[in-house]
Length: 65
Image (cartoon, rainbow, N blue to C red; front, side):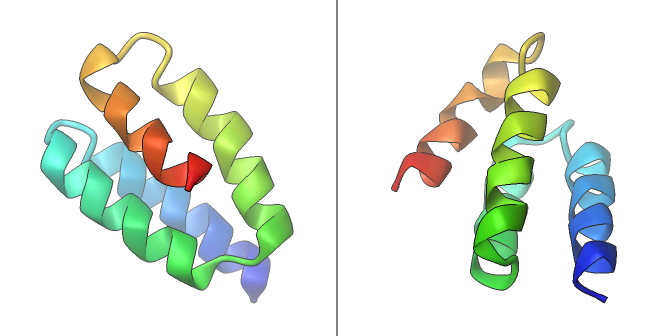
């Protein structure tokens, strides 16, 4: 089930990436739900996903907290 949450999180983040505020809020929720190793995977995915989306770079600061 945990893997399902990780995949669901990525799906939601992709869908709300048009709005940086929504993206930030959904990422914040995900960080409260996911397991530590999933957060590590999400960090890697986020770096790739936001590479061409400078408006979402600020969301990476959430992970560094």
